[in-house]
Length: 341
Ligand code: NAD
Ligand code: TYD
Image 1 (tube, protein in one colour):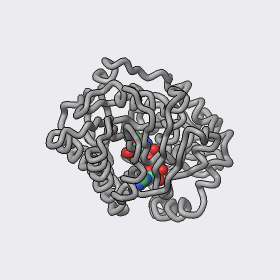
Image 2: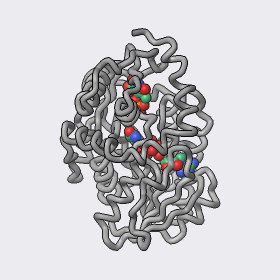
Image 3: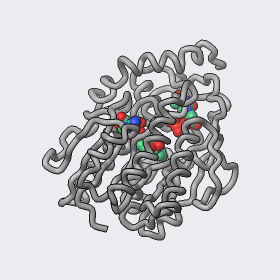
């Protein structure tokens, strides 16, 4: 499908900014409109060096229907990354999660319908399925989210599928696994542990969850998967995007420390996340049938990612200040005090 002007919502975050770079590189005639609220996780540093002739930034909230409608003017398609994304923050309070991940998604659907966009792709997560002990989830399996974040994402998805069925809105959903790479906000486990370890600070590994499993997907592979679903997918359909790299949290932690040449004495087993999903696993055969395949090997992707944080302290030191430090104290202060090892 030919897209000339693409609206990207939430493009100043981790995956959204990588996706904007990816699209501008792949499609020389494409213009991108990035509509982002710039919450604590939005960062225009993620987009430094972008070709300004092919890129427009608008600050706004997807929960604000009028602002969104203005940004959508003249666009052929939209891809939504805008979300509140951190499980641990959603456990502290989920009001923003409902506003962005549910109301915001509803506005995107309504505006897509009334403006007659050819496609709306909603970037969602493997977490909507919940935990699975053996095997992998397919797109036909039911959703069973286990925390406020994943429940808000699943809610947005259900409204989208009903919108498609009721009005024929051309919406496509992707469900990606845990993503890693440059420009990830350091509240998520990988950049948090890498940057803490660089500073010889303790790594708060959730005890009881140290053998929990996540499937790791390199960010560029996630972007190419979204691009494939957007251009070759069928409206009303869901596509899993898997990394094919399932690792226990303790294995990931040791890998980070080994790459940095740091001691495992930095690991602290702290009280677990309530309702911690044990294992995520998805099957991406449906997207692979459209021609997508992940390119990055885990060892190479981890080495490249850790090196990026080592070489880009200017980026994360700015982020790990102010709001982040307050959050860190709220999330980990008591955990470190209650440390169990
Ligand atoms: P992020 O937290 O790094 O960035 C989110 C971006 O959305 C920020 O730029 C923020 O300013 C913006 N935003 C938040 N609320 C907004 C609103 N109301 N209006 C406009 N902009 C708003 O997130 P990420 O990790 O890049 O995730 C992007 C998407 O991918 C999310 O929808 C998430 O659910 C999904 N996803 C993430 C992962 C992962 O491992 N990070 C895995 C699968 C799916
Ligand atoms: P996270 O990066 O928050 O992603 P998600 O919860 O969306 O999978 O967490 C990944 C895994 O790491 C998860 O099993 C929880 C664990 N974890 C810790 O052990 N310590 C931490 O400080 C964080 C943030 C996560």
